[in-house]
Length: 319
Ligand code: GLU
Image (cartoon, rainbow, N blue to C red; front, side, top):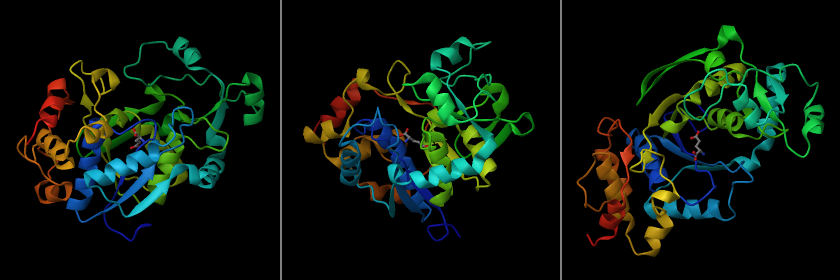
């Protein structure tokens, strides 16, 4: 049994840092269809802890776009309302965490070898350096420290079987070092919050973009330190531009709101994205719920799906 009554529990976890675009929706379609095709429940979790980057109105707009596209969910959570739970988890971690004042530039300068991807190796510069968060904060005011998780060599190898990506194995001490948990005195930051919430929501499987595959071993170490259950993971290749980089503004306006405003029907967007996953023919207009019996993970291409401006033209063309 879990918090939502047993069985499969999946989640959609938008961040209100901007409007939802085709890339977000394609991943959410996989997550939603996976849950519904297994008779499971879906929790919507608004990840609104990233204050400088969160945009006013973006959370409500995201929910509105999702409903318009045919998504539904059984429970709704908002991370900014769950700060007491993050503080409690931080206290539970006790000596496993320490405040760090290193800037990104400091950490980059400390790299002994180039590390692939966005994640930097942290050599533990601030381990044992400050007696408290307050002491660290005073040293770098007005900048804010971050909490780092102390990775012990004996526990640092993490292996798991990703439903889509296959076997993953990583020595966190060697690749990431002591990774950041939260840039907030109370622990309200992405890595701690995602671990605490997945457990509290009873999430049995995390379906998300594979940009987070490299962050998963760190999340598993935090679960273990807190004695929380480990969900199954399923990381889906992201949507990229022709340049192979993650879909962004420079690739064109792929916001759902923009297609809506220009009169594109929800069924057409769903159909075009479903075609990219092998669930229907391109040009077929279909409602999200109608895809439940057609859903399969194995027809999704293992390579990132590349967006082109021509896709937007075909999307806007009458059925
Ligand atoms: N909120 C994150 C995002 O929009 C997803 C985090 C997660 O799925 O763990 O990229």
